[in-house]
Length: 499
Ligand code: SIN
Picture (cartoon, protein in one colour):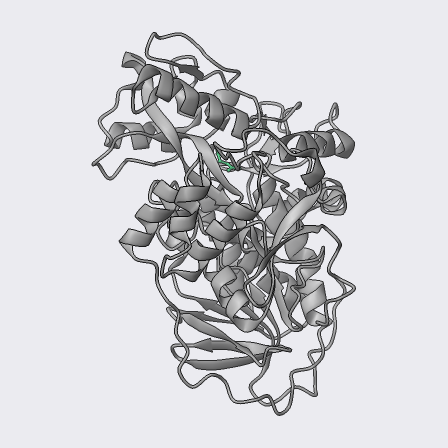
């Protein structure tokens, strides 16, 4: 990114860019904006090791192998996305992901190398080539976020407000002027939501508990549109140890890329372990129902577990001996595909407000995210969002007063239970209707969006509509500013955005 002079006409104390969230996407946007001369404030409620990015076991998908290509990566992404990927977003991701990997290496991130000294490339479900770049085996998130956080801490143009909570966006409904936190308002010419996803709204989840869709809740209250909230990806292989603290812990898909097998109660394989994730999850749920069991088995004996020290340590802590037999697993909520509707530069439909990473929805993932495309997304679209944020108009010299009594409603345990039981991996209209009465606003919008998509597609399975409806190809659910849900063909919103 080219450098710019920090704005001279901004209000005293106003930042060029305020970023809510300090996971991979937030840290990356902060560095990109600051390195281009912008003054940045990062608001981070959670310590680094509680962000979803820190726990990411998957890597970055990028077509860097000699026998791979961006067009092949695009084909796999479209195939996984089941007919509703935004083509322009896919083209951007696959074209720019290799450069994003190189840029991270220049920043000092040490990805795993093979014996030949080249990047060691992993295989995951839905990928037709080895193209997943990892760091520390299944510790990619830790390696990435630790390195980026160290760089952020050193940068003189970045101020990190750790422990501060965003309570509301500072919005007049026409434009976002910054963020209102529990430590006071932060004025900014551009505000970037990098709050991660909402998969912890589902009781059975692989995510840290803070993944409650805060970005979507803040954005909707401020007057921005949301999209595709019915599309939550359920990871096929989360530990099934009910009643223990290990229930729902992720067993990375990368182990299936190295030979782990899925087996039913009879000890036999029942599906292609490396099919796209929605297909594997559906096969596991069907097998669980047919077996009358609570789990299927993941046989890790073919896998060199010394290459996955974090998984070996997890199993050992849980008292499981993988050499003794298959490990019990069942699907759990993993990734909220929907979020704040954005264009390809992260701009939301509210002027001055952008979103990146899992908080955003460009339409890239369609109805089923291809494994490990999401970390790549954080960096590819984060770079673009940083440039767009710096291009935002200067901060308003006389914004309206911020909301004097901002609140952020936290979801209760009852909400998490309801979202899992009423909008879990298989839905029906009667249960979705019940969820519409939930006190947590995002739970209600998830239910309304899932009711609006009257078909089964990708991660969204409706028992009353078991098939894809071709009339809904390339169609997305959009939550308008008044909370109404409509089905939209996906136009880039850039033309309408007024950042
Ligand atoms: C995994 O490692 O299986 C999760 C990675 C991802 O969700 O992309």
